[in-house]
Image 1 (cartoon, helix red, strand yellow):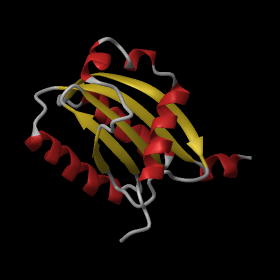
Image 2 (image 1 turned 30 degrees about the vertical axis):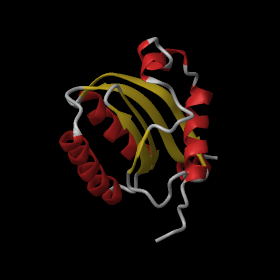
Image 3 (image 1 turned 45 degrees about the vertical axis):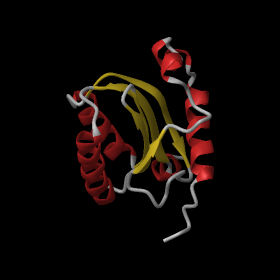
Image 4 (image 1 turned 180 degrees about the horizontal axis):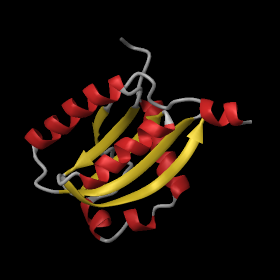
Amino acid sequence: MTNRIHSLIKQVIYVSKPVGFDDKILKSILTQSQINNKKNEITGALICRSDLYLQYLEGPAYKIDFIYSKIKLDNRHTDVTLLEDGRSKRRLFSNWAMRDDPFKDWMWTKQEVADGAINRLSKGDAMKIFVQHSREVDQFLS
């Protein structure tokens, strides 16, 4: 049983509010994440815009715990809220050290976010967003 638990990857989803969001900050976050995540066997996706970061991370549990503790202290965003902390046998974003995507049209408007749509998001709903998102991405292209 212990070996099975250790062989599962950890999945974390969090939401936060950007501070000073612009293309330069976003590029810095993505560049740093892609380098660090590749080195640490972490994959995932960052859905972002000026009013919201929604990030999915997956990888070895101790590495996810470490990176999430650093994320919570990062001054490029505030109000970091954990939406999901689970385990899985397989990765959703196996070929992406950090995939950057803008919000999709099936997600919230800025007004819905301002009105608290994220606060009403359940853990299951957060996971469904990234499962749907991963299905839209052709991960098998080089």
